Image (tube, rainbow, N blue to C red; front, top):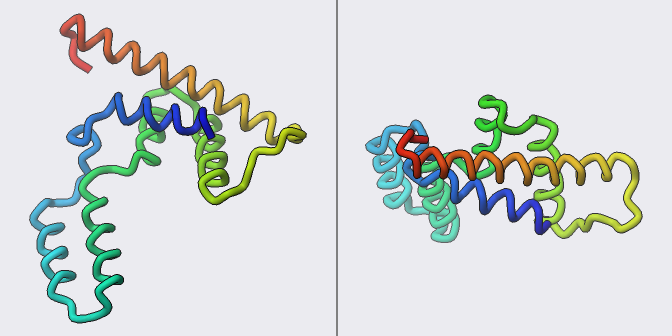
Length: 134
């Protein structure tokens, strides 16, 4: 879980909310939020829908590493391992100390992902510092 959280934290540092801005037109999101706000159903369901709409303003942190695969900064296998371990641990499934070969592979991929994301972050920051953009 620590490595999965580290990857997520580095990705959040790398890409600002503006860079992760979703492609939905702001006016469409606002109109939909107004529609949900006017809906006369269950208040807690309305709150869930409103929170979901608010989350659509930016691309999910879970999707951001997939764009890094396209840039060949990390591999799909590494992202898949991160996603699987992250989701399992978030739902209370623990990585067992007597892991099997498959789990060992996922953990190695997660370690390599952590290194790859870290290298990409450092390179990006050095480019910014040197005035070459991101």
